[in-house]
Structure formats: structure tokens, C-alpha cells
Length: 311
Image 1 (cartoon, rainbow, N blue to C red):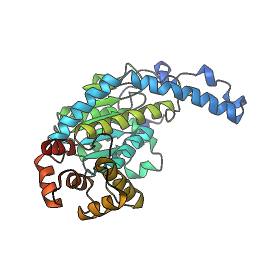
Image 2: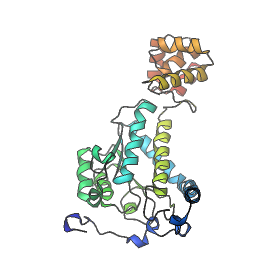
Image 3: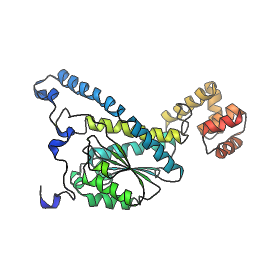
Image 4: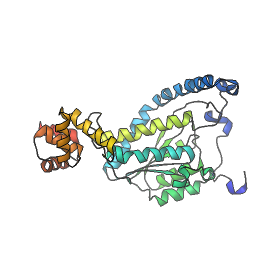
């Protein structure tokens, strides 16, 4: 490694000590296998991921409750990481506005190197803790926020730098890695570490580790939004109907929540300016859209609480 690319922090533990970097006996001769045998090996290894995540459910639940508490007080959920880890955070964050009708600044995903790194690898930045600190400062991470530092190894300097900065500012810090013990867990308040074992291709942590991280991120964002009242049962009642598919989904949600026929649901949704929650309150209470909006506002726009108040 050239002097300019030396990590800001010692690379501990060594690569050989990281389970994600170890040799996987199941795939040792994978280059001799047929295509079917290759995918069978990958599939068998992927089957281990859900069990690894299962072992971390109590920590994930703890993180969800803590994140929701911060967001209720006006804070943000911020994902930061380098490479695949950072891209997965950016992906999860980008799905929150259309799914839960939240502003894009509420859940932020930041990958080392910025937006350009989403499509083009910029791996050298992962070695810079200072870059992580600088990006966290640029995002104005503060005491009201929750920051999730994502790194498969648990030792990536960029993620460690971001987590350290967030902790210094009083933010809630959460670590997501696929090794243990790691330097990251010594920094963060809550550590989530699904141990998925060695990768099919040694060290290619975009595979099992990436899948585990995606599963955990799905839980963190979805669980948080459920606690914030962004669903009614399992219905996506805050969906933004910005295209035909989502318009049809919104219509179906109104039908499922009210029992209305399609034509009646369409008419009601139109009267409610496409607002799913407003349409449902109108159907279940007989209120006009403006009165329904007022009732929702009185209950923090939580549909379950609004409907309970009308019963």
C-alpha cells in the first residue's frame, strides 16, 4: 500500500482474524464446478444468512426503538459506510420517501466518495477515518440524530471516523458489521453483528455480508416507520402515488382498509387528493376530507390512533 493510502488507524484485527476474510471449504473448488453446482453452493451459503440475522434480533429491536425515539423528537436516521456497505445504506434511505411519505432529509444514506461512488467504486476513501469525520460533519450530524455506521469488517477507518464524530456530537451511534469483536463495537452504543461466516469467494463481502446488511437495514427502516405510525396493520398507508403502479397500490390499500368496491374507492381517493389515510378515515367515519385531515392531525397522522378515536 502506498504511503498516501495508509489507513488513518491501525488495521486491527488482522485480515486473517476476520471470519469474513477466511477461506470457505465449501467453495474451495468452485472453479471446477458446473453453473448449476456453483449456484447450489452459493444458495446453500446464503441460507445461513437469515439465521445469523436472527441471532441479532434483540439488538436490532433495541436500535429500532432508539431510532424511533430520535425521529419523534425531530432527528434524522443517517447511514454511512464505504463501498458496498455505503451503497446498501444509500439504497435503503432512497426507498423511504416513496414507501412511507417521509421527506428525503429524514433518512439519509451516504457512501464514501459521495453520489459518484454509487455507480463507480472509490475504495481508497474507505481507508480514511478523516474522510468519515469530514462527511459526518458535512451532514451536520448532531445530538438529535441516529447514525448507523456500516462496515462488513467492523474496522473500516471511514466508518469508524464517522461513528466517532457522531458519538462526540451526542448522536445515537449504531454499528452494523459481520465480524466480532471489532473496533466498531468499542465506539457505538448499539452493535449489530450477524456472523455469516466466510464468503463463497474469499473476502467478497458484497455476498453474504452484503445480504445480511441489507436484511438488517430493511428491519431498521421498516421497524422504525411502523413504530412511527407509517403503516396500518401491514398496509403501506403513507405511500406516495407518484406513478401508475403506486396509484394502483394506493387504490388497493384503500379497498383493503375499507371494504369498498374499486369504483367507490377511486372516487373517494380522488376526493382526498390521493391521500390514502384521508380516504380511509372518510370511508370509516363519514367525515369530509378536510375534517378527516383535521382528525389525523390531532393524532399525529397515525391512522390507527385516529380510527380508534372515532370508534
